[in-house]
Amino acid sequence: MVQFAHLYQVVLRDVDVDLRAIFDSGDKFDIGGPGAAFQKVIYRVTIDSPSPEEQVQRLVEHAERGCHTAQSLRQPVPVEIEAVIKNKSAG
Image (tube, rainbow, N blue to C red; front, top):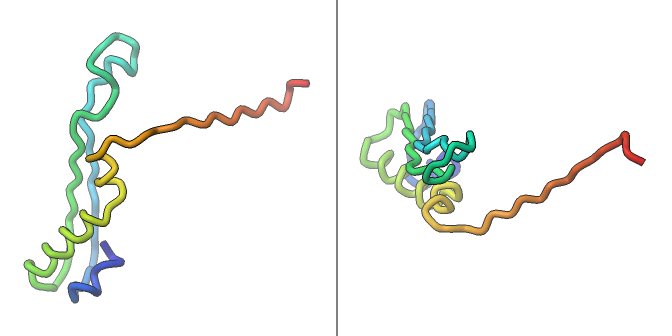
């Protein structure tokens, strides 16, 4: 958001993001369930700014469009796990 603020002539005094996720923990603890994926992600952005609210709202909308995390959560993307296991005692 900070990187786009100048485009909208928005002064940011403080920005706080609270991220929360809703999910079923059944699979995590091996007791069954619908899966460990998030069912919903909510992020609340609290902005302290002396700039007009309309300009700040336009900035927020731009920042959301440019947010790789939000866009990736909205689209299925391949996920790969690369495990690097080091064992100094072997050998």
